[in-house]
Length: 96
Image 1 (cartoon, one colour):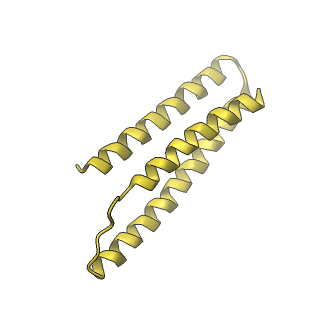
Image 2: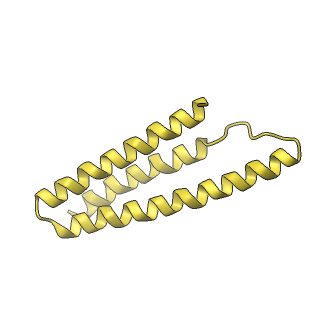
Image 3: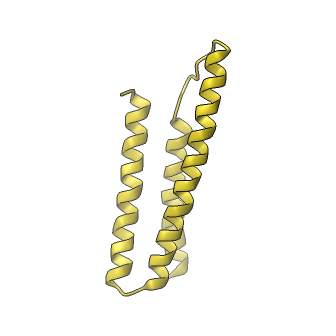
């Protein structure tokens, strides 16, 4: 597994772990609104990741067929998920 793939995997695991803790906390506090926010955010970010990954896959295939390989594959997906975690945290603070 490449360094970028390991980095992306750890970022995804961290993102979903933080979301799971927030969801369990919202459920334990009997706050359905917060739980709905976390679950909706998870769904949106997962869909965003799928779209970005599909775009990256297409880019990788096209650039590979042209004889060029991407210099820093998967890094923008890491940045996307770190930004998503920050957005989720800010959204939870603003909502409460």
